[in-house]
Image 1 (cartoon, rainbow, N blue to C red):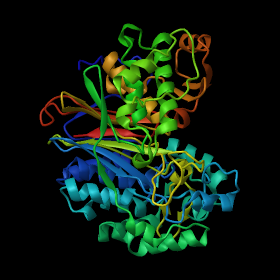
Image 2: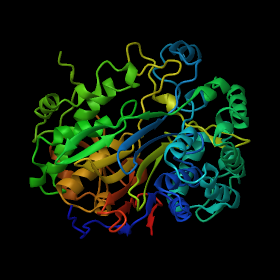
Image 3: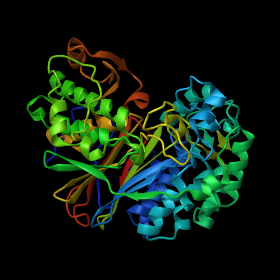
Length: 537
């Protein structure tokens, strides 16, 4: 790909060119990954170390109680890892309706009854065991040091930390962990997390077993029981992450790979499959027509995903049926180039997240994402070990007939999705765009900019984005051209212009292979919507 390096968008970032590189949303985390590579570790080792640091420096988005997913290129082939945890064995629709009323549609948004088994730590171990070079304990060293010594609060994380405080300060353990002065830290203020350092040391010493079968598991089970939850030591001990085969679809000579359901990555594949039926490259990159086609393709994708996607074994249709070319062509024909529409689900049966990516000069590339779901997850923090727990259980349905209906040991619908791009079976780019349902939308928008329009990864990252919500409602960034905004309104889109890019439009990290990784290396980008950094050597 011959990129255009004239970036037409305001940005404080430039592409980073290096043979070994880490890109994520906090500089200390990116530098931790490079530190591990400089000690002889590979990209997998760097990704694990980076992920551990991210639990500390961006706790709004993830923590030691997160879930995770990964797609990695080992130098020969792609591998997928699903490290999302299941429902506790006591969770049934009857359990929730007895506690929250017969009209409850989902498990609660916050509190212990929103917490599924956290999967990230065993995900780290699984990656290390299969592909890592250094001892697992070595990978925890940078995070332990940061937890003990502390770090100065960056501006974007601080803004979201302060915003979440009124909502979560009464949740068990939250104030003790995250309001050390009775308030959120200020920008530039030193934050230490001694409890998390204890957890990381135990995780390092036992290769994660303390978390699932040892002292941390005991503490989590006790904390859950004391605060009205039913997560048990047995639930934790039984959990294992799953190696999976990524699902994929071709687009303009490239192949996009996503994690299969229970994740929403299939939405990006569907949208691109629909969009491929149009000659979008013939339209100006930031034009009304180009943006309208992308929005409508994404709407069609979400109409199917929200209806059909759940734990793979519970789905009534297969991902192959949802990605069938004839079916996607029939969906594409529903798009009116002159009018915004509210699409219904089709019938394909015929008969607040962190993302990081790392790559090394051997050619290993890792696309990794972990999340507490909504800001600070459940809001519950086990105090002895500082385990900030996700609220993925809120993603279940309690409705009869839903493929995503809660059941013991079942995994909920997940929003976090790593992505990977190949061409002719060879690696091209490890990337992701975090942020709830913005993730497949960000995958599609940035890929269209790079593949159809030749924008370099940093420019594609910097460009103004839109976000589809529901019906005809979309949000657009304040940086979007005024004539494009008005043109979309004229087509019938119900549009709000949003100044808060963090909240609505996600943040991406990109590593594009420039050639031989040992010679040309990589082109990396980091989203200006976060405090992040693409760093390399």
